[in-house]
Length: 58
Image (tube, rainbow, N blue to C red; front, top):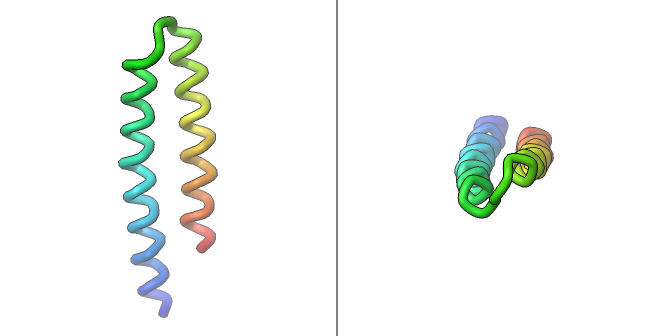
């Protein structure tokens, strides 16, 4: 059972990494100023952190 949970958490984190990468790429293309890009990065980081925490606490 523990092995299944570890695999599930690892898969969740892998999906989170892909999602974060896509979101950061969107920040690069959709922002026009450094301030907007910085705010976008911060929002992505916060969202990714919350998702990662949820993956680990499964």
